[in-house]
Length: 82
Image (cartoon, rainbow, N blue to C red):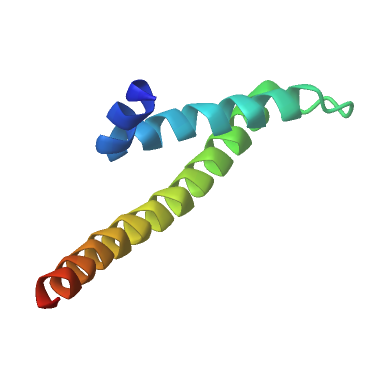
């Protein structure tokens, strides 16, 4: 798990990996579409979708990290009082 710990310490790396993964999934799904969407439209829709989902993931991750830091501070203060 050391590789995952290195990634979680660098949020930008986690977001880049998420973007690439979402882009690949979006491209694959649109590529397999039987209607035959033109290539530029396929690329544009995949990039926009990946950017939006990555932005949502980044906002949620930042919020989670902030709450985790605050929770650790509260637990430390509670232990100090005991």
